[in-house]
Image (cartoon, rainbow, N blue to C red; front, side, top):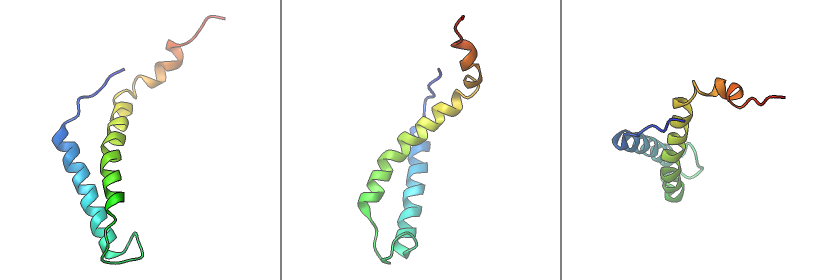
Length: 78
């Protein structure tokens, strides 16, 4: 299994872009009923969870060539 080395600056840029976009959409009232409000707890929790989830997806895509061989590697003799 391969574990990629993440570029922290790219993860920070990606997370900041997503959080800023969601903050603007929340402020305009697209995601929530009240306009002019930003839900900081939601953005904070997303800011913590998003890089972890993105790294897990990176691990999966890094090892995708390994997945089709999984059955062959774990086959037992019967």
